[in-house]
Image (cartoon, rainbow, N blue to C red; front, side):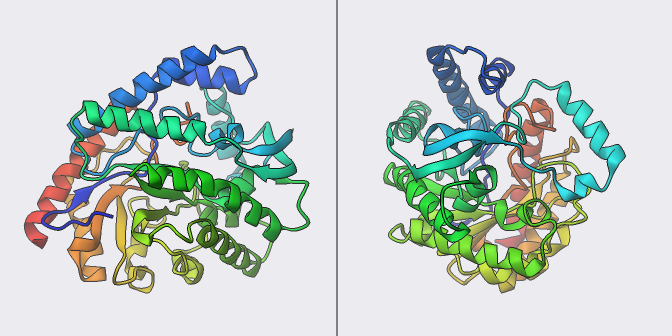
Length: 387
């Protein structure tokens, strides 16, 4: 895992805006409408190739494939796991439920979008979970490698994302395993195939784990905090088992409270989840510090970040169309560097992805690129003062 040796490096959390035509194909497929598989593959590959160049243009040092060949950071896994079937509807987030006017306006806005649904039509576990065929993830890795080679390998370090066992357990209802621990273990064993494929292809693995924060106000909204903390420990156990022979420096772990513009006033606080986060055998963490609910929590990083770990600090918000001033970004970077006492272990990033679900991005595409350019300038300013 690269560090900011001579200057603050920049990255992001994975998902980037998809072309409208590609989004429409994903949305149609999600509605079970006929979609030509070859057409979808061509569109996804072309979007991925274009997104590599766009990241370079905007000053991203540690970049990825923009998740263009997936319908979301998470739902794509339904096509790669066996043992799934049926459907169910996931509950709404508790902070949204308590504001009926906001809930109504948000729902009506979602109806006007061509997008993939994140609540209805989710799968169940009705048999043994497995990852029977690694061809899709290997093809995704090969496509990304080819795009990088064609572009002259422009990134300081390339990365690819994959969801945590806990996040998959949040969208797949267990109707097969005797308990949650067995279910998480089965998911970890299956997802290990994907994790290994990404690392074996020479990429940094980012584990997307919003479950380790967000599920407190979703799955665990009506349950005591202690139940959620116990869940967090079980998920980290499952993650550690899945990556047990992958070097920690090949893995970074992303945690957030949900990539949506909403109240977030029921979010669990970072300091309460640090006890299980710090048990993860990873080389660093990716955390949001730009959004108004968690901007202050960089203060707790000394309790989380080990001396051999890095922190990707979210310094641009992924849910608003404000373009952060470079000086604001620099100040956020410097605050984090002062807190952990070492700028070499600080990387600038985004709070979350800009289109974690196809069609559900809140930030206009041209504004996304402006944010990245501002982040690169803010990192340059911070570097001039920190190094």
